[in-house]
Image (cartoon, rainbow, N blue to C red; front, side, top):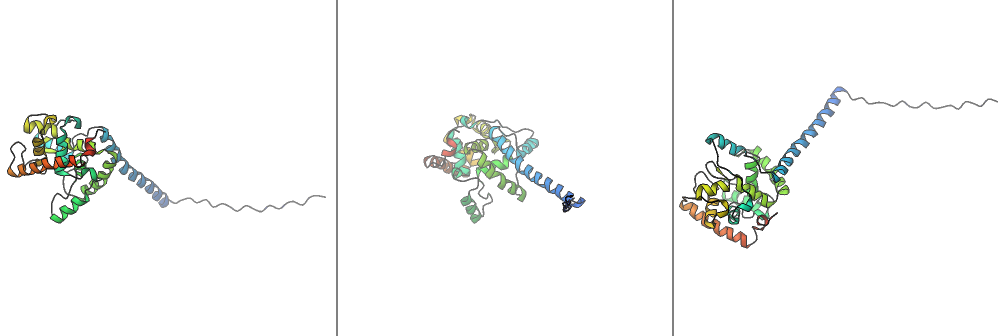
Length: 248
């Protein structure tokens, strides 16, 4: 007797989704958007990491001054070759809480806003970002970039490296950049030989280097330098200089 044939149920047909042209375009645009976002984030990180170990070249402002003047005086010098009192003086003058903040001094910003100061409580870290990575000016674009790069630099660099770069990019007179050029320009000595008085006078010209002189100081510069000299001694005594005075 022949066996009855087993009936097989027909398998349901699978529906294959094929995106249309507009959907494919949207997916392509989304992929490229995320790639661009990753690139925008990765490039600054890589550049900041590079300048952690490689001395940065002239920034936008320094190049503009070199083009305007024909030449600028600048020679890189490691922090070990600078009198320690010079580093303490610029920190005392520009950012006394440098060792205690992560790139932004909230208390200084509040005080500056309350007093109507135009400087806005800018820290040494912010000034390094402006001089090395960005440009001078008060545009919102620059401020936004500065706000993003500053904490990144604080994470990737040591405080000692930030001070070292600052001392090599700060403008001390028209066309005179960095502490090595400034020490020889004003006092005829190398940066390692700067005295406490000389260091304080160099730091005193930083807010307005084209209008102030360290070698022929006005009464305003003399008074400011005296305060900076006391401040440098204070931050050494209370530990606010420890983060950049200790070798890495």
